[in-house]
Image (cartoon, rainbow, N blue to C red; front, side, top):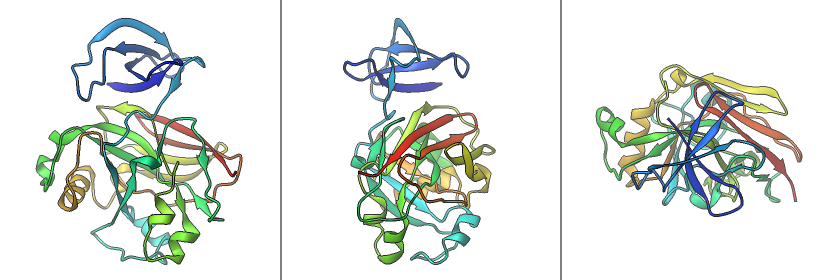
Length: 262
């Protein structure tokens, strides 16, 4: 089931996304289905230009991110601070970094090399801490596309990753939450202006979905709505003003954002 957060010019609402690509309709719900029953209202809205999809969730507190979780990306990032191995680099992005589909990625003035990182994000459905991998499934609400936008030059210069990873608009997510996804075998791509620059498969992750939740929850308590980002495949590429950036995950959808420099 696909759950979207949207607006038609008024307060944000939630809906089930129904229909084939290009023919989607929003089946409007009474509330946020993560926290309430989310009953169907009977209202259906075509997914057109009059509808603006929003970030499908605003994390209650944070996004916990796994770095170097694909072997090929770990190799291309071997000059970045931190070891490469079975245990990934773990870092945070604040909820203020989150934007939704079609919202601009604002390239920070302090960086000349801002890059895309196409990722799968796990949406946490229940508070959890110290979860074992074999119990992780019960804490998953669903999945969404994410772009872990990174100021790469700053990340390379500094031992901490905060300025390189945590700036406003550095975490586009969307277009919706998919509650059922084959995470064992799904293609993931990152594109700039229609050209694929990143390509991988979720099965290539060093640490899988359940292990990612275990790693994140060992460090910090995960709250409903928090995100766990699972790393990016190889091919990270610099963004320029005016670029259109897309993250596509097979069986989930496509997240699209423009990049701008002010």
